[in-house]
Image (cartoon, rainbow, N blue to C red; front, side, top):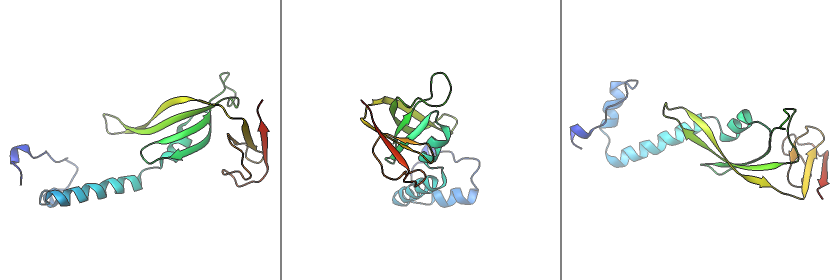
Length: 150
């Protein structure tokens, strides 16, 4: 065991019995416990995809989840405030960011505008995609119109 002067002060909201059981663990067991707690927290939190969809302005076209971060392609809001600007597709790097108060928020980093020659729009749900598709991944419809930009 380590020197009692260097032991951290346990949080007030944990039971004394739990603190005693944790304090009795050796380093390998503590590392296993930490790994389990991190996986448990991840299983309880809202997925990054759901947070992005719920908290973004504009129209999300695609989310690529890479675990610690996500790449998001989206149409930004129209500058005049009437919907989205479908002429622009922007790429963002999005990750969770811990605040000093313990809360989490999404940190968005603009990577640039994406220039593609093909855009597909689902005629059923209205979503647009910056690649050619046969079936809408959002609603499953096969009523998709593909346009080529000049």
